[in-house]
Length: 116
Length: 145
Image 1 (cartoon, each protein chain N blue to C red):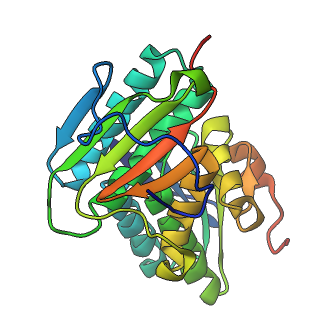
Image 2 (cartoon, each protein chain N blue to C red):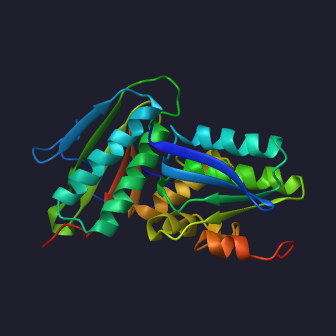
């Protein structure tokens, strides 16, 4: 498998760590992990892409879907990503305006609760 | 060729099969698990042709997107990918992806999720065209001089 997924709780947040490559073949696993987290009550989700080596449009679609789903439940979904290669994909598609992107988990966790 | 939203000029493929002597030809079964193989081969060929690492990444992602489109017809038809130099005077690197489906010809054919894929393709390749059953991606001025 080229994708690793770990879900854990850090304080009020549910962190989904994604390692490896997110593409049309592996993206459904990420979708399942996000859906499961929300079904389990997660509302403040952080997707940690520090270990993500590749992201395609299918993966972007899963992230957008996850963001929309959790927002309808008054929650939010933020991303940790500092890889230039992957940030480029967000920039080209204009999704840097849609997602909150943190450079590190520390920054994501330090972000204020209830802040915009 | 018809254009998937970019400029209408440009040299056509070297031969009806689209494979010249310096081209690499890859055929994969039309199953999503094989898209990664296509990406790896595309990156290797781009690197071998002398493209810089940033360009190699662009090729990797763009070819992955085009191959994913080719598989979107759900026919499990094999996908044939031809990669190699194009017009040498223009320093072109060209990738042809032929399979079950091409990228849509116009914006009216797409929905929101398709739009992300097309945005990526158009943002990464210098030219995106349709030639029969193939999606053709061209990068210009990328071959070492």
